[in-house]
Amino acid sequence: MERHVKAFKAVSVITLFSIFNLFLTVFLQIILAAVFGAKIEMDAYLLAIAIPVVTIALFTSASEVVFVPFLKEMQLTDSKSNLAKIESTIFDFLFLILLVVSVLAVALAPKIVQYLAPGFSAPAKELVVTLFRIITPSIVFAGLSGFMISIYHSEERFTRAALVNIVNSSVLIVTFFLLYPLIKIKALALGMLLGSIGQFLLLSPILFRIKSHLFSLDLRNPKLSKAGKRFLQILIGGAFIALIIPFERLFASKLPEGSISYLGYAGRIISIFLLLPATAIPIVLLPNLSRHFTMQNFDKLRHNLALGIRFVLFIVFPIIVLLVIFRTDLVYILLERGSFNRVATDGVASVDVKVTSLCRRAPPEPDKLFRSKSSLCGVPPF
Image 1 (spheres, rainbow, N blue to C red):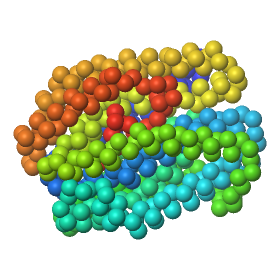
Image 2 (tube, one colour; image 1 turned 180 degrees about the vertical axis):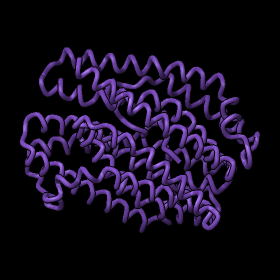
Image 3 (tube, rainbow, N blue to C red; image 1 turned 90 degrees about the vertical axis):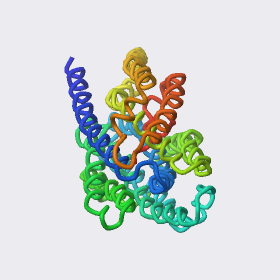
Image 4 (cartoon, rainbow, N blue to C red; image 1 turned 60 degrees about the vertical axis):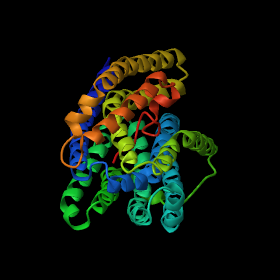
């Protein structure tokens, strides 16, 4: 009973913070729609964030799926000292990978954009390159934040981790309002970078206990090797789904101006309404499932997993139906003001019905229940 009460409190806290972040996200979308509408600046920004956001989503999703159960098992079976060494090794290894990926992406930005935006004009491509180079370092901070969140979740400490999105959104909004008069759309890109740094700093207290082991890679632990292979498998498997986002924007770059913006706005509206009810349950459930698995209590594991899936689907399906029926009215109420005109409303609404129909036909598999925004039904933030 005590554990159920604790789980209920955790779900309540995460849901409360998610609702607050929902208001921040909706507010940001309203402002962006009014300022940029569905014009080339927003197209360029959405194209620039495609690869960084996909990379972040892959690493954070893989961290949650692999390292939460792995660290929970270590907490139950190993010493605190050895656990700290393992956490430090994972952190160091992820840091090196993310740093190399970030540096290469910045250096190769013109070539990447050349392939990613074949339909853009030369000035538009230059803008994408500039935005891409500003945003790309966020891969390091957000990717490492994903692993630190996994540590908090494995210890069933959800409050600080649940604040991450609020900090990220708040920093982005403040940066945009302060710097937009000076650097226009670049303020949005800089806000995304600073938001990732803010969430890293919020989570950084967890590093104090492993600071004595930092930058001392020790890959000899056989359990760590097994977790690493699992992590790599999920990265590769998730890439086939996540790469849909860059490819869809690649093809949309050949369409009339605003097409990428339609995809971005529609995806964001869908993710706002679908991710909120489906976030708290999996986050709280995964450590409990890991405990049951480690203790080989498979009956409780199956019961809790089935209960979580049923509860999520029970909430999500009615939302999908409402989004399909009221899509045009919803886009009109949320976005149609300023630079966002009726043509943009119709364009976004036409995308909404296609993606929500796809999500309705593809209920989540148990393993995918715990993955974050790396699929069509969970589109990355602006």
